[in-house]
Structure formats: C-alpha cells, structure tokens
Amino acid sequence: MPLLFRTRTLLLITILSTTLLALGAVIAGLLYRQQAQVSRTVRETLRIHREADALEESLIDLNVLLINRVEEVEPLHQRIETHLGELNRAEHTPELKELLVRVENSYVEYRHQFENLPDRTSADHDSALKQTAQLLNNKTQAYCTEFQSKSESDVDKASVRHGQVLRELAWGIAGLGLVAALGGMGLGFGSALVWRQTMRRLQIQIRDAAGKIGGELPTLVLSDSGGIRELDAQFQSLVGRIEEVVARLRQRDVEVLRAEQLAAVGQLAAGVAHEIRNPLTSIKLLVQGAATDSPGSAPLTREDLTVVEREVLRMEQTLRLFLDFARPPRLERRRLNAVEVVEQTFDLLRARAARSHVSLNRQVPALPIELEADPELIRQVLLNLALNALDAMPHGGTLTVRVEPGPEQRVLYRVEDTGPGLSVAQQDRLFQPFFSTKPTGLGLGLVISQRIVHEHGGTLQAVNRVGGGACFTMDLPG
Image (tube, rainbow, N blue to C red; front, side, top):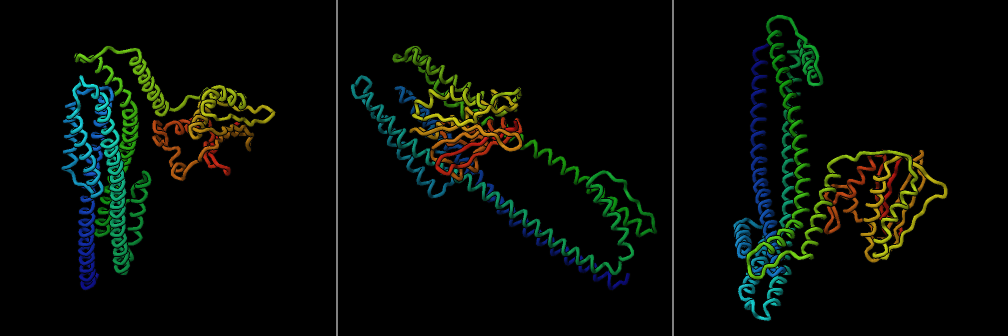
C-alpha cells in the first residue's frame, strides 16, 4: 500500500472519527440535559399529585367524621395542614397555584367556622356543625378535587413530554448512526481499491458473524499469510462481542417482560386498594365511634350493622370481580339452546327493568339455534351487557336482545339499547381494563366478558345504532 495513500486514509479516518465523536457528544449532552429537566418535572408533578390525593383523602375522612357529629378531629386538621404545607413548598404552574390558594382560603374559612361553633348544649350547635361540614364538602373538598384533576392532567402532559424526549433521543441516535453508516460507506469505497483482494474473505467473516446472531453456526476460520490471519483473529473477537451483545439483549427482553408483569400486578393491586378503601373507611368510622369512651358514644345499632354488612358484601363483590379478571375462565362446554339463555337472562332483568321503566324485547328465530358453549359464562356475558344497557337508560327506553344465525354455522347475539350511544373516546377505550363511565364502576365487566367470548373462539364488538343507542354483538361458533 503506498505510504501517501495510507497517510491520507488515516487522516480521513481521524477527521471523520473526531467529527462523529464531537457530534455524538453534543447530541448526547443536549438530550441528557433535556431528559434530566423532563425527569425533574415528572418527579415534581407526581409528588404534587400524591400530596393532592392524600389531602383529598384526609378531607373525605374529616367530612365523614363531621357528618357523624364527631368533633375530636384535631389530628386530621394537623394532617391536612401538613399536606397543604407540602403543596406550598412545591413548584406549581400558575393555574395550580391559583387552585391551591382557593383550597387554602376555603380551608381557613372552614377552620374559622369550626372554631366558632356554638356550645354543644346550644340548640344551634347541630345546624352550625352541619353548615360547617357542607362548607368543607362544597368548597374545600371541591377545590381539592379540581386541583387533583389538574395535577393529574399535568402528570399526563409530563409523561407525554417525557415520551417526546425519548423519541428525540432515539432519532438522535438514529441520525448519528446514519452519519456513521454514510461515513463508513465512504471510507469503504475509498479503501476498496487497496483491499479488493481481501474483500471476499471479509464478507465471509461478516456473514459468519450475522449467522451467529440468528443462530448457532460453525465458525469459519481462514488460514492465510500473516496479515490476513491477524485480521481474521480480530473478526473472531468481533464475533465474540456480538454474541455478548445478543446475550445482553435477550436478558434485557426478559427483564422488560418481568417489568411489564410487575406493572400489571401493581395496577391490579392499586385497583383493589382503591375500591376497598371507602368501605373500610365506613366500617372503621362506625367501629371507632362505638369503641370510644366519650359520653356521647353508643354501641353499634342494627342500622350500623346493616351498613357494615353491606360494605363487607361490597368488598367481597369487588374482590370476586378482580379474581375473575386475574384468572382465565374455565369452560364447561355443552350443547345448549341459544334462545333459552336469553329467556333466563330476561328473568333476572325484569325487576330491574321495571324500576327503570325499560321495556324488554327479544327477537329470536322460530326454529331453535344450538351452540356448544358454557351456559353460565354466556349468560354472565349477556347479563353484563344488558345491565350496562339499563344503566345507559336511567329514564326509560327499550332493551332488545336478538339471536341470529351467522355465516359458517355461527351464532350472533345482539344487545341493543335506546340510550345516548357511545362517544369516540368510549369506543377507543371500551375494552381496556379499569376504564368505566360509571361513578362506582371498576371497568372490568367488559374486559372479563370479552375474555370469556374469546375463550369460546368468538368476538365481542360495539357500535352505535343508526337510530340512536348502542349495539353490542357477540359472535360465537355454533
């Protein structure tokens, strides 16, 4: 190789390497600084949201105690003021700052009214306590809820921004890789004149390395004079490094899968905790009220025990629903009449439909239609869809269930209502876990129903009817 050519090649490689290194350092620095700033914003926003959630929970507890005429609430006052202090020390947007000022002012107004309550022996005491509780609920708690909603929106925006930064990081790395690739192509083209005779051997080694990424292939060893043997040894080292990278990537895939599983478990646990917290709070307040040694305390009454029983049943129902969500259904298939399942479902719905002034209408063929399925689970899906339809028609309407033979010996169930129908946002998230439009809904009914239908080899879809209302179609194999 001529000395002049080698010198020029070395100089070109040095310039290109230095340029790429500087470009990579600049891009990495900019993206790291941007990522750090976004991460700080996300952490601060999450901290504000957690404090707002704790503040709202304390206000709810305080309001429940005041409604039950429990006035020894100084620990709750201290807890609320602690949360307010933490929120004041955080960095807020102007809108959040304004909402926080409203929360604080309304709470100061409540404390003033609470501390100036008439004596307990006064005839005006109970009415003044009730007005104080209403002030706490209608103003302080309402402003806190608005503050929490805005902070949750800020969390979403921060998460979106975080995703944008990650995408920018990916594009930056991709751009850097593209520049490196183009530079490598240029150097390769320039060096091809000198290395033309060795290119074939290099291609063989590169294909061998690529094969090792896809699977275990025997290593191709070249034997030639000194320079080529040294180059072959370097490529063997490169092959070993590629294998290490592949092993790390596989391990990372396992870790990502484990993280996704843990995230799903965490979401499920958070949902359980959220749903059983309110019943436990009610039971705790009743028990604490009966167990206190204050002169006004009284043992649990029949009404209190009824409340305790109702809340326990509510927690039991919640846990049963989460268990149904967590474990796959066990099918017990047998031949059944598709129309009889509709009749059995209507028997369970008539009382509820009568209270809601909803008329039940079934449209079935004259000839029986049979399918092989689990009757209990199919009835569970129909009942869930029908109850959702009744909830969509609180002021009356018509609930129609159709049974139709489908193509290729399939059976179609259509559950139709005359309610307001489904919005675009609802259609996009209809079958997502924990999404519900009901104030007390868990957002698992449709998810479990869809899973049951899928286990039967069918599909569950929802559309808006032309004349108004929604239509859920369950398509099952016959």
